[in-house]
Image 1: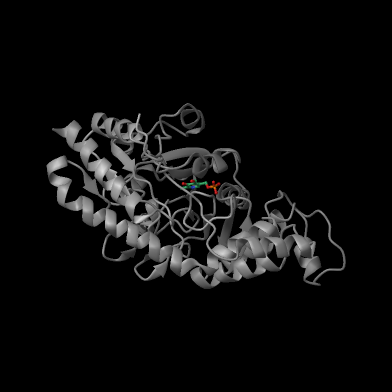
Image 2: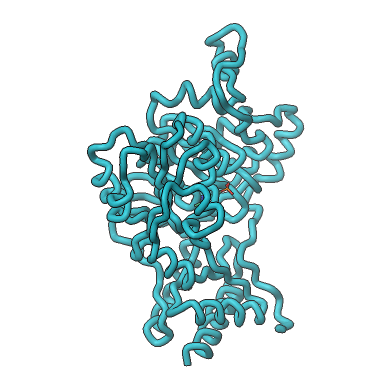
Length: 385
Ligand SMILES: Cc1ncc(COP(=O)(O)O)c(C=O)c1O
């Protein structure tokens, strides 16, 4: 084992006024959801995405769950989700009774494959959940084309990686009826655990507010629209504490600086690693010309699973901590239990076994990112020969 200091995979940093804003929130006495910091953070997100309404939630998972409630799923309904994603992209809908149809990804962007979606689409489908993997937009045109004569099918962007990205000039998060964001400590902008639901259809706003607020019309009461509030519908306690919204606002204020440093790191890795790609048998992420990525992560696709696993182990032995990513959901125990029928996702199976993510965080030092590159090249070279 190396005696060099550890370079972690991720490190969430204080970027600006986090401590001051959180202290201000605690002193104000308004620490539950819906306070002044939530309003300010929500306004920044609304401005960035053009959403009709932004609701800060306790996580992206919670935002997906609120979306699933909004769909009023009935027995026999199904939802199309990628197999290559985080569990809750699928679980949120399974929990509301949907059967899942696991869709493959296309190998260029690792986004939902429109051709496989076309194969899976049947009368039972109520929603499709594209994930903009690594903050690179899916082929949304392809997806919309497949859904052209199915206006009844809701598109829900799982935009956990995609805040501030764009597709053909339009912000990610503005392309579906709903979009969900994550501010978990592993994301570009963080507040520990947090998320947001973006509503892009004004017809969803009133009901979503009730479901968000424990099934009550408390929001209408606070806005002076009714003189008392009561239980109206299903729902849960989805709101983010205003103290965490204070943390989030401080991060949002540093958006340009954070994104600038992440972009510089992404470009540094790309410039250092591209020249060796052919010799060492790996490929870099592809960002099509009509998309702006978010510099959420830096991944590489290794030549095969043996090399990928060997590089993971070899780098960790040198105290540099890269990691793999999603384990396919379609073949997981719960995935099989909740699926409408078995589906084949060969690209997901292949990519999942070959993908490696390098340490990637706002405050990594130039010396440490040099060490990441050097360790990666040396470890890969030793395995590939
Ligand atoms: C694509 C995707 N969706 C949803 C989530 C869940 O986010 P959260 O931890 O905010 O619930 C993640 C988590 O990393 C994710 O990668």
